[in-house]
Image (cartoon, rainbow, N blue to C red; front, side, top):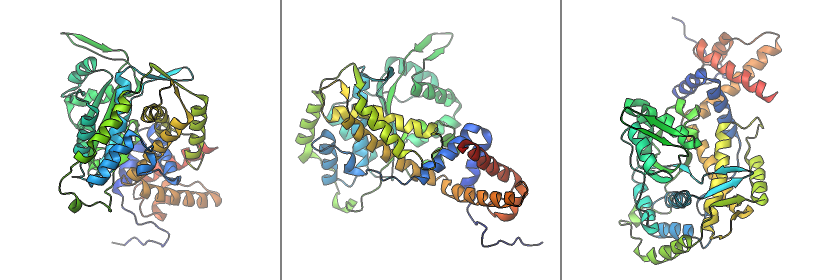
Length: 420
């Protein structure tokens, strides 16, 4: 039996992550488009605003994150996202809306916080909920039918869920939750949700929830498949990775005691609670201009059409602008360029963390193989012949089957068409 020889130009890369992405790419053009968009996002190297750089000075958010910094080793992203979520939920519950060039947007945010096991995810959220006096939350869905009934009763509510990765996996694996995935897609878009049985009929014409899911970073890839990541479902969520702070270790904080900071946090929240809310927040020309400038700056470097992944993430800036408007204790009815500037910092942080998450799905390996495919294809075409699957199999060790080769050629060919 002859051994296959590999030239120095051939790539010896792990295949499992690539296989998942290629399997997803074969299922639909949308999946292939999303994969290419993700690759472009990875190539852009914009500086993210980490930690306190997304915290307005002298704000409730600063009071909370400073308390956690001084008294715990909990990653500051966890109380940060809890604060933003609770303010989003407050706006949504009060019936506030955002007006953007005639379009009406609900201020709901969908966020997934990814942190190491034992990093204090639940503690951080519970403490912020307690400070804000939030006790009514959306109940855990036991089934798709129960979800619809609960949504009818708690529409425009706040849904906080631990072990969110496990929940997402259950949507794919448990039959009694199969319909829930479709309901969540409708919920995100604000489309009517209805369910009819022999016993009763339920219809929610304008559904909305603010969602905060927390899950363990290390196991998230085992919960959410590559197919779910690139078919658009997972892209409804803004991901935030909460890394441990090496300057604050567990040995420094055997107990989490925030009692010395309670007065400061409570007074800061009272200022937020006393900030009047308006039914409609109009997006000013300055805010729109700031968004357009940020969109161009953050657009993937290769300049192809922005796809659903990038647009959804960027569009959440308008919801964040409303949240920061309240954090800044602005009593006006207009979202300003300053609000948008803070919002874009938060979006850029999500974009940076999305890049990191995608690497765990083998996107880095996929990108390197795809570049090699482009080189081989270009070389063969320069010789006056068409690149075929067998050419890739012979020259690139990571490509082992004709099916894989055809998937890579489809990605390269469609990408070339989209640029022309």
